[in-house]
Length: 97
Image (cartoon, rainbow, N blue to C red):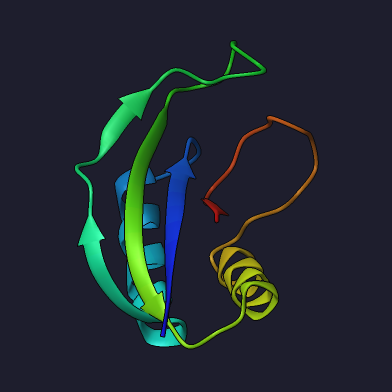
């Protein structure tokens, strides 16, 4: 089993629901969520005129390799409506390893 740390963020739409949906999808598709931080609201970075983000960190146990985990997380982002249009732009969900 591999341990990975994920950072979730959302600054578009129902941000709290997006984080909850991401957590549920991560648990189903990648492995067990071992720990989750509190949810924090932070100012947008890079493009400061955007709405603030809700952010959360997760610690997961997964059998996936780093590359497979990345691919799986990108599929989760896409399924939740993530559209990559602009660097530092609006995001329904962002999941970083």
